[in-house]
Length: 250
Length: 286
Image 1 (cartoon, chains in turn orange, yellow):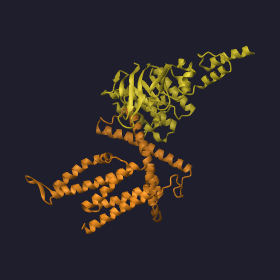
Image 2 (cartoon, rainbow over the protein chains, first blue to last red):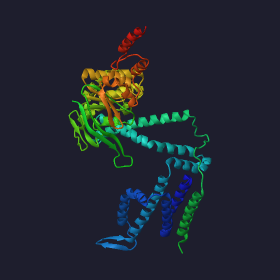
Image 3 (cartoon, helix red, strand yellow):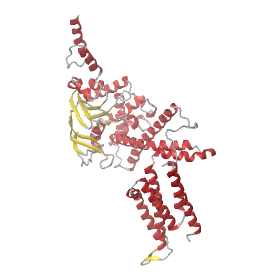
Image 4 (spheres, rainbow over the protein chains, first blue to last red):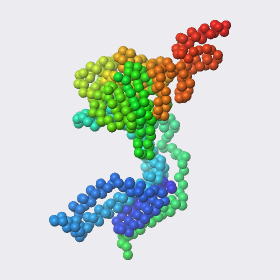
Protein backbone atom coordinates (compact mmCIF):
# COMPACT_ATOMS: atom_id res chain seq x y z
CA UNK A 1 0.00 0.00 0.00
CA UNK A 2 0.97 3.58 -0.53
CA UNK A 3 2.37 5.13 2.67
CA UNK A 4 0.35 8.28 1.99
CA UNK A 5 -2.86 6.27 2.05
CA UNK A 6 -1.80 4.52 5.24
CA UNK A 7 -1.06 7.80 6.98
CA UNK A 8 -4.38 9.25 5.85
CA UNK A 9 -6.25 6.17 7.08
CA UNK A 10 -4.49 6.42 10.39
CA UNK A 11 -5.42 10.08 10.64
CA UNK A 12 -9.10 9.42 9.87
CA UNK A 13 -9.28 6.60 12.38
CA UNK A 14 -7.51 8.59 15.08
CA UNK A 15 -10.03 11.40 14.76
CA UNK A 16 -12.85 8.86 14.71
CA UNK A 17 -11.57 7.30 17.94
CA UNK A 18 -11.73 10.66 19.67
CA UNK A 19 -15.32 11.29 18.64
CA UNK A 20 -17.67 10.11 21.38
CA UNK A 21 -19.73 7.86 19.16
CA UNK A 22 -20.46 5.30 21.82
CA UNK A 23 -20.20 1.58 21.45
CA UNK A 24 -21.23 1.47 17.77
CA UNK A 25 -18.48 3.79 16.70
CA UNK A 26 -15.93 1.58 18.39
CA UNK A 27 -17.43 -1.51 16.83
CA UNK A 28 -16.99 0.04 13.38
CA UNK A 29 -13.39 1.07 14.06
CA UNK A 30 -12.65 -2.27 15.69
CA UNK A 31 -13.93 -4.13 12.65
CA UNK A 32 -11.77 -2.02 10.39
CA UNK A 33 -8.73 -2.75 12.55
CA UNK A 34 -9.43 -6.47 12.44
CA UNK A 35 -9.68 -6.40 8.64
CA UNK A 36 -6.45 -4.38 8.45
CA UNK A 37 -4.72 -6.87 10.73
CA UNK A 38 -5.91 -9.73 8.56
CA UNK A 39 -4.75 -8.03 5.36
CA UNK A 40 -1.39 -7.03 6.82
CA UNK A 41 -0.75 -10.67 7.79
CA UNK A 42 0.26 -9.58 11.28
CA UNK A 43 -0.80 -11.94 14.01
CA UNK A 44 -3.27 -10.79 16.63
CA UNK A 45 -0.81 -11.79 19.34
CA UNK A 46 1.78 -9.44 17.85
CA UNK A 47 -0.66 -6.55 18.06
CA UNK A 48 -1.64 -7.46 21.59
CA UNK A 49 1.98 -7.68 22.64
CA UNK A 50 2.42 -4.07 21.61
CA UNK A 51 -0.16 -3.11 24.23
CA UNK A 52 1.75 -4.86 26.99
CA UNK A 53 3.75 -1.84 28.15
CA UNK A 54 0.44 -0.01 28.64
CA UNK A 55 -0.98 -2.49 31.15
CA UNK A 56 0.56 -0.73 34.13
CA UNK A 57 -0.83 2.61 33.03
CA UNK A 58 -4.28 1.11 32.50
CA UNK A 59 -4.29 -0.38 35.97
CA UNK A 60 -3.25 2.95 37.40
CA UNK A 61 -6.03 4.66 35.47
CA UNK A 62 -8.58 2.23 36.81
CA UNK A 63 -7.41 2.80 40.35
CA UNK A 64 -7.66 6.58 40.07
CA UNK A 65 -11.05 6.44 38.41
CA UNK A 66 -12.43 4.17 41.12
CA UNK A 67 -11.45 6.69 43.75
CA UNK A 68 -12.36 9.85 41.90
CA UNK A 69 -15.52 9.15 39.93
CA UNK A 70 -18.51 8.80 42.22
CA UNK A 71 -21.42 9.00 39.78
CA UNK A 72 -23.72 6.40 38.28
CA UNK A 73 -24.99 3.43 40.25
CA UNK A 74 -22.84 1.92 42.97
CA UNK A 75 -21.89 -1.63 42.00
CA UNK A 76 -19.77 -2.82 44.82
CA UNK A 77 -20.38 -1.69 48.35
CA UNK A 78 -17.61 -2.34 50.80
CA UNK A 79 -18.00 -0.51 54.05
CA UNK A 80 -17.75 3.23 53.35
CA UNK A 81 -16.07 2.49 50.06
CA UNK A 82 -18.02 1.86 46.89
CA UNK A 83 -17.18 1.41 43.26
CA UNK A 84 -19.52 3.22 40.89
CA UNK A 85 -20.50 2.08 37.44
CA UNK A 86 -19.29 5.27 35.77
CA UNK A 87 -15.77 4.71 37.05
CA UNK A 88 -15.66 1.34 35.31
CA UNK A 89 -17.27 2.62 32.10
CA UNK A 90 -15.00 5.63 31.96
CA UNK A 91 -11.90 3.52 32.36
CA UNK A 92 -13.13 1.04 29.79
CA UNK A 93 -13.64 3.85 27.28
CA UNK A 94 -10.15 5.19 27.75
CA UNK A 95 -8.60 1.73 27.67
CA UNK A 96 -10.40 0.82 24.45
CA UNK A 97 -9.35 4.09 22.84
CA UNK A 98 -5.75 3.68 23.85
CA UNK A 99 -5.67 0.08 22.70
CA UNK A 100 -7.07 0.94 19.31
CA UNK A 101 -4.67 3.82 18.83
CA UNK A 102 -1.70 1.69 19.71
CA UNK A 103 -2.77 -1.15 17.46
CA UNK A 104 -3.31 1.21 14.55
CA UNK A 105 0.11 2.79 14.90
CA UNK A 106 1.68 -0.64 15.37
CA UNK A 107 0.13 -1.84 12.12
CA UNK A 108 1.44 1.26 10.37
CA UNK A 109 5.00 1.03 11.64
CA UNK A 110 5.21 -2.75 11.31
CA UNK A 111 4.16 -2.75 7.66
CA UNK A 112 5.96 0.38 6.48
CA UNK A 113 9.66 1.06 6.20
CA UNK A 114 10.71 4.26 7.98
CA UNK A 115 11.96 5.70 4.70
CA UNK A 116 8.63 5.09 2.99
CA UNK A 117 6.90 6.64 5.94
CA UNK A 118 8.91 9.84 5.79
CA UNK A 119 8.42 9.98 2.04
CA UNK A 120 4.70 9.67 2.65
CA UNK A 121 4.80 12.46 5.22
CA UNK A 122 6.75 14.64 2.84
CA UNK A 123 4.25 14.15 0.04
CA UNK A 124 1.31 14.77 2.32
CA UNK A 125 2.84 17.96 3.66
CA UNK A 126 3.62 19.11 0.14
CA UNK A 127 0.48 21.24 -0.26
CA UNK A 128 1.42 23.21 2.84
CA UNK A 129 4.65 24.36 1.23
CA UNK A 130 2.61 27.18 -0.30
CA UNK A 131 2.19 28.68 3.16
CA UNK A 132 5.87 28.30 3.90
CA UNK A 133 6.06 24.90 5.56
CA UNK A 134 9.38 23.28 4.62
CA UNK A 135 7.93 19.80 3.96
CA UNK A 136 11.05 18.35 2.39
CA UNK A 137 13.32 19.61 5.15
CA UNK A 138 11.05 18.18 7.83
CA UNK A 139 10.99 14.81 6.09
CA UNK A 140 14.76 14.85 5.68
CA UNK A 141 15.21 15.61 9.36
CA UNK A 142 12.92 12.75 10.33
CA UNK A 143 14.72 10.25 8.14
CA UNK A 144 18.17 11.35 9.31
CA UNK A 145 17.07 11.13 12.93
CA UNK A 146 15.71 7.62 12.38
CA UNK A 147 18.81 6.56 10.51
CA UNK A 148 21.14 7.58 13.33
CA UNK A 149 19.34 5.97 16.25
CA UNK A 150 21.17 2.62 15.94
CA UNK A 151 24.47 4.38 15.27
CA UNK A 152 24.15 6.42 18.44
CA UNK A 153 23.20 3.37 20.48
CA UNK A 154 26.33 1.63 19.24
CA UNK A 155 28.41 4.70 20.00
CA UNK A 156 27.00 4.89 23.53
CA UNK A 157 27.93 1.27 24.14
CA UNK A 158 31.45 1.89 22.88
CA UNK A 159 32.01 4.94 25.06
CA UNK A 160 30.55 3.17 28.08
CA UNK A 161 33.05 0.35 27.60
CA UNK A 162 35.92 2.76 27.11
CA UNK A 163 35.07 4.69 30.27
CA UNK A 164 34.51 1.46 32.21
CA UNK A 165 38.09 0.58 31.29
CA UNK A 166 39.11 3.82 32.96
CA UNK A 167 37.40 2.76 36.15
CA UNK A 168 33.97 4.32 35.71
CA UNK A 169 31.39 2.31 37.55
CA UNK A 170 27.84 3.23 36.61
CA UNK A 171 26.20 0.96 39.16
CA UNK A 172 28.02 1.65 42.40
CA UNK A 173 29.43 4.76 43.95
CA UNK A 174 28.24 7.99 45.50
CA UNK A 175 25.89 10.47 43.85
CA UNK A 176 28.81 12.68 42.85
CA UNK A 177 30.62 9.77 41.22
CA UNK A 178 27.50 8.81 39.32
CA UNK A 179 27.02 12.33 37.99
CA UNK A 180 30.65 12.32 36.92
CA UNK A 181 30.20 8.93 35.25
CA UNK A 182 27.21 10.15 33.28
CA UNK A 183 29.09 13.29 32.30
CA UNK A 184 31.93 11.10 31.04
CA UNK A 185 29.39 9.34 28.84
CA UNK A 186 27.34 12.28 27.61
CA UNK A 187 30.10 14.69 26.67
CA UNK A 188 31.90 12.32 24.28
CA UNK A 189 28.55 11.22 22.89
CA UNK A 190 27.60 14.80 22.05
CA UNK A 191 31.03 15.53 20.65
CA UNK A 192 30.86 12.56 18.32
CA UNK A 193 27.24 13.28 17.37
CA UNK A 194 28.13 16.85 16.38
CA UNK A 195 31.15 15.50 14.55
CA UNK A 196 28.96 13.10 12.64
CA UNK A 197 26.42 15.81 11.85
CA UNK A 198 29.20 17.98 10.51
CA UNK A 199 30.58 15.21 8.35
CA UNK A 200 27.14 14.28 7.08
CA UNK A 201 26.41 17.89 6.16
CA UNK A 202 29.71 18.12 4.32
CA UNK A 203 29.12 14.84 2.52
CA UNK A 204 25.65 15.97 1.46
CA UNK A 205 26.89 19.31 0.23
CA UNK A 206 29.76 17.67 -1.62
CA UNK A 207 27.12 15.72 -3.52
CA UNK A 208 25.33 18.93 -4.40
CA UNK A 209 22.43 18.61 -2.01
CA UNK A 210 20.21 21.66 -1.91
CA UNK A 211 16.99 21.39 0.09
CA UNK A 212 15.32 24.13 -1.95
CA UNK A 213 15.69 22.39 -5.30
CA UNK A 214 13.05 20.02 -6.63
CA UNK A 215 14.23 16.43 -6.45
CA UNK A 216 13.47 13.30 -8.37
CA UNK A 217 12.88 10.06 -6.55
CA UNK A 218 14.08 6.55 -7.03
CA UNK A 219 10.83 5.42 -5.54
CA UNK A 220 7.70 6.92 -7.06
CA UNK A 221 4.57 6.60 -5.00
CA UNK A 222 1.47 5.41 -6.77
CA UNK A 223 -1.98 5.02 -5.33
CA UNK A 224 -3.88 1.90 -6.33
CA UNK A 225 -7.41 0.64 -5.86
CA UNK A 226 -6.87 -0.70 -2.37
CA UNK A 227 -5.42 2.63 -1.24
CA UNK A 228 -8.51 4.50 -2.40
CA UNK A 229 -10.78 1.82 -0.95
CA UNK A 230 -9.04 1.97 2.41
CA UNK A 231 -9.15 5.74 2.58
CA UNK A 232 -12.79 5.81 1.52
CA UNK A 233 -13.76 3.20 4.07
CA UNK A 234 -11.93 4.88 6.93
CA UNK A 235 -13.38 8.23 5.92
CA UNK A 236 -16.87 6.71 5.94
CA UNK A 237 -16.20 5.38 9.43
CA UNK A 238 -15.17 8.86 10.52
CA UNK A 239 -18.31 10.40 9.00
CA UNK A 240 -20.59 7.82 10.56
CA UNK A 241 -18.92 8.31 13.94
CA UNK A 242 -19.61 12.02 13.68
CA UNK A 243 -23.18 11.30 12.58
CA UNK A 244 -23.76 8.93 15.48
CA UNK A 245 -22.38 11.32 18.04
CA UNK A 246 -24.47 14.21 16.74
CA UNK A 247 -27.74 12.44 16.03
CA UNK A 248 -27.52 9.35 18.13
CA UNK A 249 -28.46 5.94 16.78
CA UNK A 250 -32.11 5.56 15.94
CA UNK B 1 51.32 -14.13 35.08
CA UNK B 2 50.16 -15.17 31.65
CA UNK B 3 46.64 -14.82 30.34
CA UNK B 4 44.80 -18.06 29.72
CA UNK B 5 41.44 -18.73 28.23
CA UNK B 6 39.71 -22.05 28.10
CA UNK B 7 36.92 -22.88 25.63
CA UNK B 8 35.84 -19.26 25.73
CA UNK B 9 32.56 -18.63 23.94
CA UNK B 10 30.48 -15.54 23.60
CA UNK B 11 27.06 -15.14 22.01
CA UNK B 12 25.53 -11.72 21.47
CA UNK B 13 21.79 -11.22 21.93
CA UNK B 14 21.26 -14.83 22.93
CA UNK B 15 17.67 -15.97 22.50
CA UNK B 16 16.65 -13.22 20.09
CA UNK B 17 16.45 -13.20 16.30
CA UNK B 18 19.73 -11.20 16.30
CA UNK B 19 21.62 -13.99 18.05
CA UNK B 20 25.20 -14.08 16.92
CA UNK B 21 27.99 -16.27 18.21
CA UNK B 22 31.13 -14.14 18.08
CA UNK B 23 33.51 -16.51 19.85
CA UNK B 24 33.32 -20.25 19.29
CA UNK B 25 35.60 -21.83 21.82
CA UNK B 26 38.86 -19.95 22.22
CA UNK B 27 41.58 -21.78 24.11
CA UNK B 28 44.88 -19.97 24.19
CA UNK B 29 47.64 -18.60 26.31
CA UNK B 30 49.18 -15.17 25.99
CA UNK B 31 52.77 -15.16 27.29
CA UNK B 32 53.72 -12.66 29.97
CA UNK B 33 56.07 -9.80 29.18
CA UNK B 34 55.85 -10.39 25.45
CA UNK B 35 54.24 -8.50 22.62
CA UNK B 36 51.46 -10.60 21.15
CA UNK B 37 49.58 -9.70 17.99
CA UNK B 38 46.01 -10.72 17.34
CA UNK B 39 45.18 -10.61 13.66
CA UNK B 40 42.17 -11.64 11.64
CA UNK B 41 39.55 -10.18 9.38
CA UNK B 42 36.80 -7.82 10.44
CA UNK B 43 34.15 -9.75 12.36
CA UNK B 44 36.49 -12.58 13.33
CA UNK B 45 35.90 -11.91 17.03
CA UNK B 46 39.09 -10.02 17.95
CA UNK B 47 37.36 -7.08 19.59
CA UNK B 48 34.92 -9.31 21.44
CA UNK B 49 37.84 -11.35 22.70
CA UNK B 50 39.83 -8.43 24.09
CA UNK B 51 36.80 -7.09 25.92
CA UNK B 52 36.74 -10.31 27.94
CA UNK B 53 40.21 -9.59 29.26
CA UNK B 54 39.04 -6.86 31.63
CA UNK B 55 35.57 -8.27 32.14
CA UNK B 56 33.72 -5.64 30.14
CA UNK B 57 31.77 -8.58 28.84
CA UNK B 58 31.47 -11.95 30.51
CA UNK B 59 31.81 -15.23 28.64
CA UNK B 60 28.69 -17.15 27.63
CA UNK B 61 30.66 -20.25 28.49
CA UNK B 62 34.29 -21.07 29.18
CA UNK B 63 36.76 -19.24 31.40
CA UNK B 64 39.39 -16.52 31.35
CA UNK B 65 42.29 -16.37 33.80
CA UNK B 66 44.04 -13.06 33.87
CA UNK B 67 46.26 -11.42 36.50
CA UNK B 68 45.05 -13.82 39.16
CA UNK B 69 41.41 -13.20 38.34
CA UNK B 70 39.20 -16.05 37.32
CA UNK B 71 36.34 -15.07 35.06
CA UNK B 72 33.55 -17.47 34.19
CA UNK B 73 29.92 -16.96 33.10
CA UNK B 74 28.65 -16.85 36.67
CA UNK B 75 31.46 -14.62 37.92
CA UNK B 76 30.46 -11.97 40.41
CA UNK B 77 33.51 -9.77 40.27
CA UNK B 78 33.54 -7.59 43.33
CA UNK B 79 36.97 -6.22 42.64
CA UNK B 80 36.39 -5.72 38.94
CA UNK B 81 37.98 -2.27 39.30
CA UNK B 82 41.19 -3.89 40.46
CA UNK B 83 41.18 -6.04 37.32
CA UNK B 84 40.54 -3.04 35.08
CA UNK B 85 43.43 -1.23 36.69
CA UNK B 86 45.75 -4.13 35.92
CA UNK B 87 44.50 -4.69 32.38
CA UNK B 88 44.46 -1.41 30.46
CA UNK B 89 42.27 -1.56 27.42
CA UNK B 90 42.68 1.03 24.68
CA UNK B 91 39.78 0.93 22.25
CA UNK B 92 39.77 1.73 18.57
CA UNK B 93 39.75 5.49 18.04
CA UNK B 94 40.17 6.20 21.75
CA UNK B 95 40.09 9.95 21.09
CA UNK B 96 36.31 9.70 21.28
CA UNK B 97 36.43 9.02 25.00
CA UNK B 98 37.86 12.45 25.92
CA UNK B 99 35.44 14.67 27.76
CA UNK B 100 37.09 16.96 30.31
CA UNK B 101 37.84 20.65 29.99
CA UNK B 102 41.59 20.27 30.24
CA UNK B 103 43.98 17.52 29.28
CA UNK B 104 45.25 17.31 32.84
CA UNK B 105 41.76 16.63 34.18
CA UNK B 106 41.02 14.11 31.48
CA UNK B 107 44.12 12.03 32.09
CA UNK B 108 43.60 12.28 35.87
CA UNK B 109 40.04 11.00 35.49
CA UNK B 110 41.10 7.33 35.46
CA UNK B 111 43.32 7.35 38.57
CA UNK B 112 40.69 9.33 40.49
CA UNK B 113 38.12 6.66 39.67
CA UNK B 114 40.48 4.16 41.24
CA UNK B 115 40.65 6.16 44.44
CA UNK B 116 43.87 8.12 43.94
CA UNK B 117 43.83 11.61 45.46
CA UNK B 118 43.71 14.70 43.27
CA UNK B 119 47.33 15.69 43.96
CA UNK B 120 48.72 12.22 43.39
CA UNK B 121 46.74 11.96 40.20
CA UNK B 122 48.19 15.25 38.96
CA UNK B 123 51.71 14.04 39.70
CA UNK B 124 50.99 10.88 37.73
CA UNK B 125 49.70 12.96 34.84
CA UNK B 126 52.90 15.00 34.74
CA UNK B 127 54.87 11.77 34.60
CA UNK B 128 52.86 10.17 31.85
CA UNK B 129 52.69 13.13 29.44
CA UNK B 130 56.33 12.88 28.27
CA UNK B 131 55.89 9.13 27.76
CA UNK B 132 53.29 9.79 25.05
CA UNK B 133 55.45 12.58 23.64
CA UNK B 134 53.59 15.65 24.87
CA UNK B 135 55.12 18.38 27.03
CA UNK B 136 53.78 20.12 30.13
CA UNK B 137 52.36 23.06 28.16
CA UNK B 138 49.52 20.77 27.14
CA UNK B 139 48.23 20.33 30.69
CA UNK B 140 45.88 23.29 30.70
CA UNK B 141 44.71 23.01 27.09
CA UNK B 142 41.36 21.64 26.05
CA UNK B 143 41.56 18.16 24.50
CA UNK B 144 39.13 19.26 21.81
CA UNK B 145 41.57 21.81 20.37
CA UNK B 146 44.13 19.15 19.49
CA UNK B 147 44.75 17.37 16.21
CA UNK B 148 43.52 13.79 15.79
CA UNK B 149 46.94 12.27 16.50
CA UNK B 150 47.48 14.37 19.61
CA UNK B 151 44.01 13.54 20.90
CA UNK B 152 44.87 9.89 20.57
CA UNK B 153 48.07 10.38 22.57
CA UNK B 154 46.08 12.04 25.33
CA UNK B 155 43.53 9.23 25.32
CA UNK B 156 46.26 6.60 25.50
CA UNK B 157 47.92 8.56 28.30
CA UNK B 158 44.57 8.28 30.10
CA UNK B 159 45.09 4.50 30.18
CA UNK B 160 48.86 4.46 30.71
CA UNK B 161 48.49 6.68 33.76
CA UNK B 162 46.80 3.73 35.49
CA UNK B 163 50.08 1.85 35.09
CA UNK B 164 48.48 -1.42 33.96
CA UNK B 165 50.52 -4.62 33.87
CA UNK B 166 48.80 -5.74 30.70
CA UNK B 167 48.20 -3.30 27.89
CA UNK B 168 45.57 -4.28 25.35
CA UNK B 169 45.51 -2.13 22.23
CA UNK B 170 42.76 -2.38 19.65
CA UNK B 171 44.27 -1.04 16.44
CA UNK B 172 46.10 1.84 18.08
CA UNK B 173 47.57 3.12 14.83
CA UNK B 174 44.43 3.12 12.68
CA UNK B 175 44.07 6.43 10.90
CA UNK B 176 47.51 7.76 11.86
CA UNK B 177 50.13 8.80 9.33
CA UNK B 178 53.14 6.45 9.00
CA UNK B 179 55.38 8.68 11.15
CA UNK B 180 52.74 8.95 13.90
CA UNK B 181 52.09 5.23 13.73
CA UNK B 182 55.79 4.46 14.12
CA UNK B 183 56.10 6.78 17.13
CA UNK B 184 53.07 5.17 18.68
CA UNK B 185 54.46 1.66 18.19
CA UNK B 186 57.88 2.68 19.55
CA UNK B 187 56.13 4.00 22.62
CA UNK B 188 54.46 0.65 23.26
CA UNK B 189 57.69 -1.22 22.62
CA UNK B 190 59.44 0.95 25.18
CA UNK B 191 56.81 0.12 27.78
CA UNK B 192 57.27 -3.55 26.99
CA UNK B 193 61.07 -3.57 27.03
CA UNK B 194 61.70 -1.19 29.91
CA UNK B 195 58.82 -1.96 32.23
CA UNK B 196 58.11 -5.51 31.19
CA UNK B 197 54.47 -4.89 30.43
CA UNK B 198 52.59 -7.56 28.52
CA UNK B 199 51.31 -5.99 25.32
CA UNK B 200 48.46 -7.37 23.30
CA UNK B 201 48.04 -5.73 19.94
CA UNK B 202 45.05 -6.11 17.66
CA UNK B 203 46.29 -5.09 14.25
CA UNK B 204 45.74 -5.24 10.53
CA UNK B 205 49.18 -3.98 9.75
CA UNK B 206 51.46 -6.92 9.00
CA UNK B 207 54.52 -4.68 8.85
CA UNK B 208 53.94 -3.75 12.48
CA UNK B 209 53.32 -7.35 13.46
CA UNK B 210 56.56 -8.47 11.83
CA UNK B 211 58.61 -5.60 13.17
CA UNK B 212 57.37 -5.35 16.73
CA UNK B 213 55.65 -8.52 17.90
CA UNK B 214 56.96 -11.73 19.42
CA UNK B 215 53.91 -13.90 19.09
CA UNK B 216 51.03 -14.11 16.63
CA UNK B 217 47.49 -15.37 17.13
CA UNK B 218 45.22 -15.58 14.12
CA UNK B 219 41.47 -15.40 14.62
CA UNK B 220 39.03 -16.62 12.03
CA UNK B 221 35.28 -16.79 12.42
CA UNK B 222 35.40 -16.82 16.23
CA UNK B 223 38.08 -19.49 16.44
CA UNK B 224 41.84 -19.53 16.77
CA UNK B 225 43.14 -20.45 13.37
CA UNK B 226 46.89 -20.25 14.00
CA UNK B 227 49.13 -19.54 16.93
CA UNK B 228 52.87 -19.26 16.64
CA UNK B 229 55.92 -17.12 17.27
CA UNK B 230 56.57 -14.36 14.75
CA UNK B 231 59.62 -15.99 13.16
CA UNK B 232 57.77 -19.22 12.37
CA UNK B 233 54.70 -17.32 11.24
CA UNK B 234 56.47 -15.27 8.61
CA UNK B 235 58.48 -18.26 7.45
CA UNK B 236 55.18 -19.64 6.16
CA UNK B 237 53.79 -17.12 3.68
CA UNK B 238 51.18 -19.69 2.66
CA UNK B 239 49.52 -19.30 6.09
CA UNK B 240 48.94 -15.65 5.35
CA UNK B 241 47.45 -16.44 1.98
CA UNK B 242 45.19 -19.00 3.61
CA UNK B 243 43.67 -16.41 5.91
CA UNK B 244 43.52 -13.76 3.21
CA UNK B 245 45.90 -11.18 4.61
CA UNK B 246 48.54 -9.31 2.70
CA UNK B 247 52.05 -10.33 3.82
CA UNK B 248 54.61 -7.61 4.66
CA UNK B 249 56.45 -6.09 1.71
CA UNK B 250 59.65 -7.95 2.48
CA UNK B 251 57.89 -11.31 2.35
CA UNK B 252 56.28 -10.34 -0.95
CA UNK B 253 59.65 -9.28 -2.35
CA UNK B 254 61.16 -12.56 -1.21
CA UNK B 255 58.41 -14.48 -2.93
CA UNK B 256 58.90 -12.56 -6.18
CA UNK B 257 62.65 -13.27 -6.08
CA UNK B 258 62.00 -16.95 -5.38
CA UNK B 259 59.72 -17.11 -8.38
CA UNK B 260 62.54 -15.67 -10.50
CA UNK B 261 64.69 -18.59 -9.49
CA UNK B 262 66.66 -17.24 -6.53
CA UNK B 263 67.36 -19.70 -3.76
CA UNK B 264 66.25 -18.01 -0.55
CA UNK B 265 65.69 -19.97 2.65
CA UNK B 266 62.37 -19.30 4.41
CA UNK B 267 64.18 -18.29 7.59
CA UNK B 268 65.41 -15.00 6.13
CA UNK B 269 63.16 -12.26 7.49
CA UNK B 270 65.13 -9.03 7.39
CA UNK B 271 66.29 -6.84 4.56
CA UNK B 272 70.05 -7.04 5.20
CA UNK B 273 70.10 -10.82 5.26
CA UNK B 274 67.97 -10.91 2.12
CA UNK B 275 70.35 -8.54 0.33
CA UNK B 276 73.36 -10.65 1.36
CA UNK B 277 71.71 -13.82 0.20
CA UNK B 278 70.71 -12.41 -3.18
CA UNK B 279 74.06 -10.68 -3.70
CA UNK B 280 75.89 -13.98 -3.50
CA UNK B 281 73.62 -15.54 -6.08
CA UNK B 282 73.85 -12.63 -8.53
CA UNK B 283 77.63 -13.01 -8.50
CA UNK B 284 77.23 -16.70 -9.16
CA UNK B 285 75.13 -15.95 -12.21
CA UNK B 286 77.80 -13.65 -13.53
